[in-house]
Image (cartoon, rainbow over all chains, first blue to last red; front, side, top):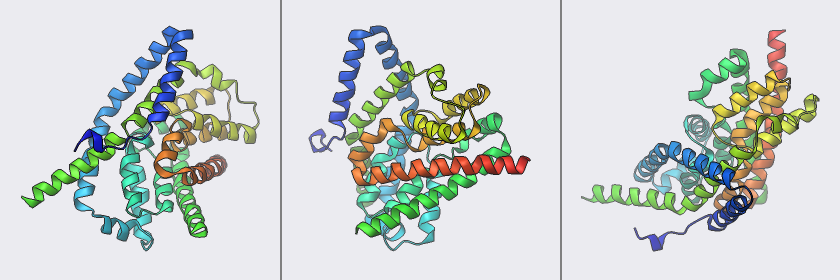
Length: 168
Length: 144
């Protein structure tokens, strides 16, 4: 793999953010350093998740060929695909944006928009943080909220699917 | 031998996909640093006006603008509740914190296209308001 082969995404976005930092540095130098430090701290926290995602994507690339992705998550996929999307959304760790490379690859191979939307919405159920949510808001609230999130995720997926079909 | 090559190929493909997104990830991380420094709890509180429906929309918008570890949204949500903000608004806030994420929208547009991102965000906005209202109404009904 050569660096020259890579098609970088977000160069303009990064350039725009760097300009914001330069402006903040000129007018409020101390806070720009604080913001940079905070960003670095977040990056350090995310590093293990980055490694995990590269590992998972490698396994998916190895075991799940484009044809299989089409079969399980494409236009002709059935109810199982919805269940996989919901489970995938719930168990996926870290912020949404770090999953973009893998999801982009899936979408190129035929992943339906509805399933992608369901995956993205059900990510709001965070298993590791359930005890904290219960501590702040109670068991009843947590159970009811998660039930509605599941229903909301499916509703969104259905809406996105209907929209895709209408446009096609 | 072929299997080894396939694994190497699969790894290279995933690494390439990840590295191509790296400038985007950096941009989002840098923006998060700015948000963390400039947006305080008092600033957040000043947006709520003690009207359940309006505050639910405000909560959705604020949660959508901010992003980060969901645990922070629970802690902030807990503090907002203690400060008198309605549970409708706080529920919308913690939900949209994870599901919308204004900071990552430019990246989402670049990866999935404008049409997908626009409709997903719109549906997420509507769903979040519906889920928040339904959750609090159901909880109140169960506990009454």
